[in-house]
Figure 1 (spheres, helix red, strand yellow):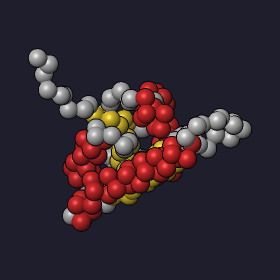
Figure 2: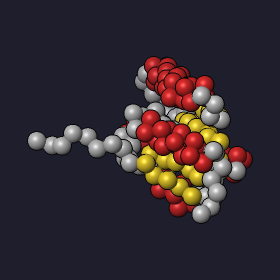
Figure 3: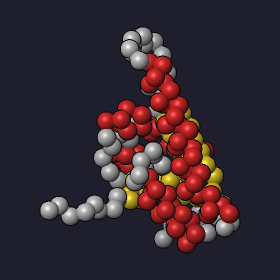
Length: 156
């Protein structure tokens, strides 16, 4: 089996992200690997060459900034305890096209394994984070682990 020394968890601002980060933490501990947690957010307000009138653009931009801040807070809370316990974790929060940012991080940090959540994004998530799992899986130069979300309650 290939040695896993550098693990990248791609985190998104969702409740399901926590499960992927937990998997990454467990794998990093098991393999004595370094863990990277990447949160790549696409800023829909940085459209170059586009002049799209948005009625409440300032409110949307404020919401976008709040989402970025909340993402940083969520990631900090998820991994702070593990850092305190000695696990090597590097947090990366970047703004850009998510798929491109994942590939650049894998190359720059020499990642051996990428951990992704495996669920369908909603409309807001799609707009802010993109539907990039399919492209990442097909083109990734290293192994990829998809973490399924926990099943919800059984329907009545």
